[in-house]
Image 1 (cartoon, one colour):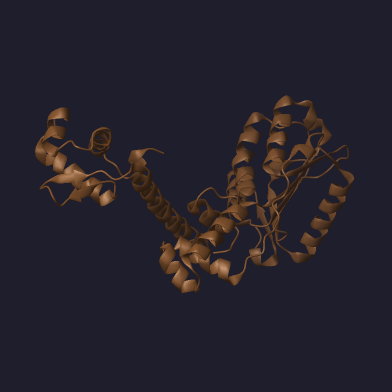
Image 2 (image 1 turned 180 degrees about the vertical axis):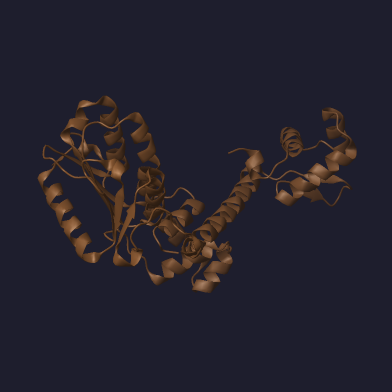
Length: 333
């Protein structure tokens, strides 16, 4: 991220850097130095004042004071982080729109009504679209069995965005492959990537059937395991799901860990959060100052800042913005 990402125009950045090198430069001197007219310089400097990185010098007409950049730019970064956090929260809270629009969408190639708990899709593009949709709403777990030998680069590239989405969200991912995938270097690298990201991967010498179970609420299985071109079934029926889950867990018990599975990172412990900590995070995300937040919670500013520092450490965040995003991801906000 550079100064343009913080709201600087090219002219503003040019003039600001010059004024950092020599804070005594006047608008006329800046104009002459960079071949600009005086009105352009004054307009750019007014924009820098609005950004908070310059101050007007009341003792000198058309003069400006250059504050310490560490503090000025630091405050500008924090404001931008707060804006991004508010935007992130608004986007997260807009997920209800997906459900609303989905009700309007007439899904093609459905040969059996959804209210019976089983939906059949015959077109490969419809299957991919539905898998993308289901993964979007997955928040807890993905259990997957992938039979057969090594997958092609194209298949792995198609799987990567969905797998990475689950890993970023902290979804529990368990994947079973047939042992023959380890014979291929490309597939070994991909499985290592999954494992290092936090997924649990096992291999088996037994013949297994393809399935994907998301949040223990919906499963995707082939219509014909011997011929994937015949389509897929989306299963939500509780009785059928129970059987699929039992089948997956038995297959998981019989499978073995990857040789490098011990290298994967430890699972992030589930942290408890008190009502006061939650309220502090909410105030932080809303952009309140430390003083306002402290009054709202009923603690001193010093105590508030110690609490924020502790929460940032527990969340593994390097900034307040990162803490807000991670807290929102965990459902604390």
